[in-house]
Amino acid sequence: MLESKVDLSTIAIWLGHESVQTTHRYMIASMSRKEDALAKGLVAAGRNPGADATERRGNIPDFLESL
Image (tube, rainbow, N blue to C red; front, top):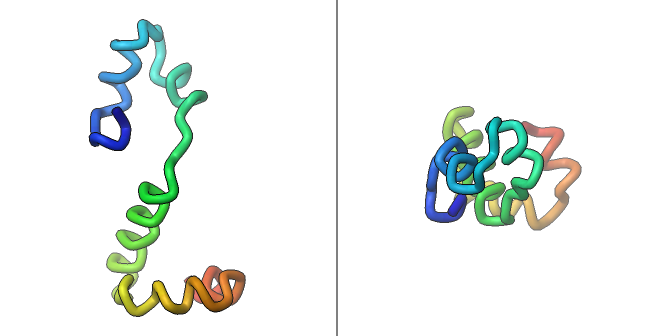
């Protein structure tokens, strides 16, 4: 459901959880969701996510330091 962009509170209701925090405990972000979040951060910082993808593959620690 997360991959389909269903809100976490809706997922909590479907699972019968009393709290969104309970649902959040089981939430694991897929690699594509992590990449999307990173790309949004790069755009917000005025960087080009497409160009930075090459940097990420090259030297991840240096890339993360540059953020």
